[in-house]
Image (tube, rainbow, N blue to C red):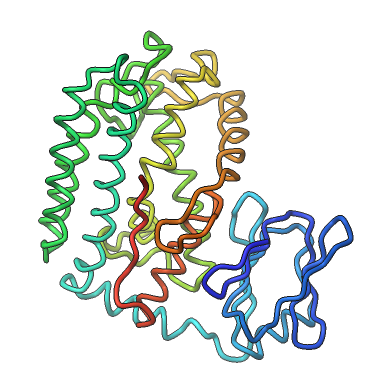
Length: 343
């Protein structure tokens, strides 16, 4: 259980929520419980199998406290509402901002600032931790380009320029990505980013990991009442979860890239976990997906200090916290969207 930003996170899969007087009561598997005054809450995120009592759900609806239910793995399940759907104003604001390229650019540049900044620090960490095993000068040069990029992007006011900078930053980053692979280099060689389809094992891991992260971002956005299909950087396209793709930009490299490098470098995954199709596509097989998800769930439980909140959180909470911060910015509760910056 964790309380952040007047939001109660129920992270134990066996916890049960109930109502007692004017409190939400969290009953744990070991028989212990904790009372949380409803007066102090704006929302509840429950990742528990057991859910909550109808009495609590009804009281939350009456008080305008959003309560969102997810599977323990983070898949959005439901968000009960009362007579008035409280997020209608939020979604109307989201649509107004999305319709304006100028307003969209003010948010989009923050997402890309975070992406480029975090990519730079992933390279810097590799040099710091493995300086004798990598071409440090080559990586530092790309890091310098990324530093220049994230400094420029905050002054950009149109989406096309932001996309252009993001593309150039991604090119510089991926030009040294193969250098970050320290073990199993014969089986995991990265030459260039290939998406549809992935043409090597590293790209297979990247594409699969980004899809998993995008699903987490969809759940997070739905949980705070935002429409995952209405984006700011990624424009509307039928069937594309544009806002989820926007949101994940800032933590692609720290949640997915860093994770798959660990899988490879620590030999947790190897060549036998992949299958090659007739069209040249390389995909994770069933055993590979089992390894991926097993390690992914463990990684999501690891703790870090959130750079904006200055509190300990789990990696798995990051998409949900950032979605909540984005919703508060759109509602006017925050002067700016606090980008997730990892270091």
